[in-house]
Amino acid sequence: MRAIILAAGYGSRFKSDKPKVIHPILGKPMLWYVVNTVKNAGIQDIGVVVGHKAEEVEKSLKEEDVKFFYQKNPKGGTADAVVSSIDFWRSYDGYVLIVNGDSPLVSSETLKQMQRYLLMVEEYEGFKLGGLILTTHLQDPTGYGRVVKASNDRILKIVEEKDASHEEKAITEVNSGVYIFYTPYLLNALFRIKPSKETGELYLTDVVSFIVENGHEVRSFMASDPLEVLGVNTRWDLAIAENLLRLKLIRFWAEKGITFHSPETVWIEPDVTLEEDVEIFPSAVLKGKSKIKKGSVIGEGSIVENSEIGVNVDIQPYSIVRNSKIDDGSTIGPFAHVREKSYVGEKSHIGNFVEVKKSKIGDRVNAKHLSYLGDTEVGDRVNIGAGVVIANFDGKRKHKSKIGDRAFVGSNSLLISPIKVGKLSYIAGGSVVSKDVPDGAMAVERAKLKIYEGKGEAKIKK
Image (tube, helix red, strand yellow):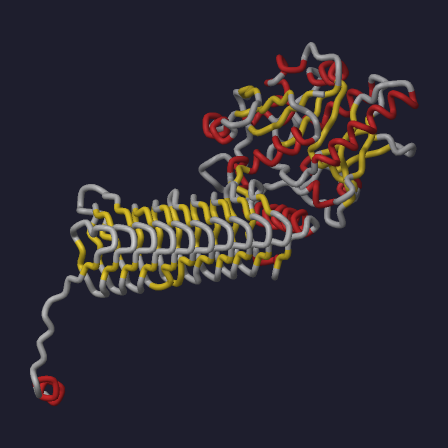
């Protein structure tokens, strides 16, 4: 089977300067979900019809193996969009799936079931269906095309709401915008369509009546979940679709052994992977291609983006880890920030209000309070006292520093890069260190303390 995804429209109800189908849902373009669903249904030969701001739409799918076809008149309607891709399927003797690019909730399992149904009709009834349309019943069908059926439950036609009569508008079975047609019958019907009197568009739904008139059957396939039919036409539709997909992802991981506390508050994106016994607390945000390994905890309000979190890591509340790796057994936070290609070794503790940027932190390192470690390589079992700052920027360039194994950096010390602090060296609290410190040495840099008797009391009274 081949697939055509229609992504050429303006999306005027969406009220956006950029194409509707590239607006993000959980960090991915809306159109990506449709492509991904089609691929997961086993269909690899995919054409995407683009029109309005085609370059932006094509760019959003640059990593996907799809073919693009250009609709010259995006206001020409869905049938005109399919005609725009005719070179993709005209000579193909098989079925073609047609789906709207703003239908991110359609599931791959539903598409697989539709394919199996077609095969069953061929095997047990001995003929090919002219078409199979995904439909559902809605209590309020406003905005959807209505499915008109004969008494034998075969589809006669699909009527767009703008063209529907009063009786047709009362029908509750609606068209989802997911179609499978047998291509020779589709080709014959497409060029018989006339523009709508109301809008001037060529509706793809009109091919149904022509296929039926030619003596072929078109049947409906009822969606198991009516929510799959939800198209995204407005920003509110987008919000609903995003929330449904988010909860679907959370349920998927929960069934694989992940604990979510207050799942309605957790943000998770499609490329995130989780291992058993991971625990996610309220308002956590998991983004990009993050990987959280077994037994780790992501605390309340924390953000993990494009990062690898090792086994039994504790990301404490309101901490941020971006583009970094945290090794097994370490603790991050609370209120810590690890970013930009940083690495934190095993059983280390990056504590509250500590920022690590583009640095490698060894095993069993303690940096528990109010420090900045930028462009620094820190060895194993190093102690970083409260208020330690690595001054890595001279106003023009960033410089690197290195702190050796089992070094001790006292509280409120300032290390001016580039600098090398040796193994087992000791930097006394409050020191400003601008020279290398050899292995095993002690560095002390303080101005002489002066005490003036009585001066303090006089100043306070004054």
